[in-house]
Image 1 (cartoon, rainbow, N blue to C red):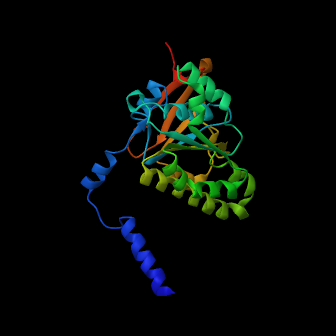
Image 2: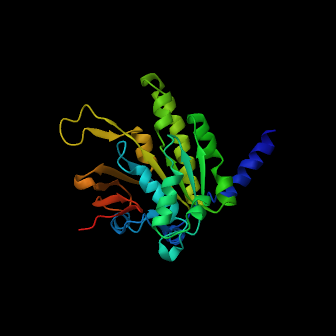
Image 3: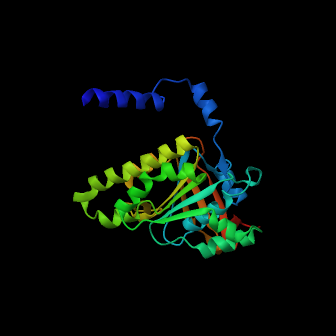
Length: 270
């Protein structure tokens, strides 16, 4: 009955530390935050040391710009010892567009001098076939992440199914609500389990833009507010890529170039 439900709620509140804390306590907690290297020193510097745990990093860009390549490289890097830029854990990859390539992970690991079969064995993959399936997979992340020593969760792409299924303005509110629920679960997972969460996002045309970039990130304010760090990636001259931090609570807006290679992603050689 009601009394039993109230008791459960009160007990749950104790577990989630719903009390007040000081900024110093928060600072101490954040000292346990780790960073996973991207494999590019320049990109790591852009991200103040790499992809952060207890946070959600969003990679934004048009098709073929290298978002998935960064994610695949991170899946290998996270397995490395902490002294070599890794988090000594496994990666979990939710694939919504069929972009995960085990062959590419194999080649990245081999090019780095690692054991490719072992690298593949440390990446857990789930193919999400629609937005409901994607939500279901995200709901089950807490259990699998604790059981399998997962230190990196990738969702590539976060928005694809939601954009495809909720078409038209009349469905926008429902789409954003469901997307918001998924994003908040991912952020809570990152904070509670001290893992890095990386989501990729598409771009959409911005007809109101008279000059400058004709595209803007998809997902609207919901995605913009949920993600801790937002990185916009564009193609640049000579086959290079330009990564720009467009929003972050602690990293200044800045830019760096990188290149996609056999090792995944690397610094641009002068």
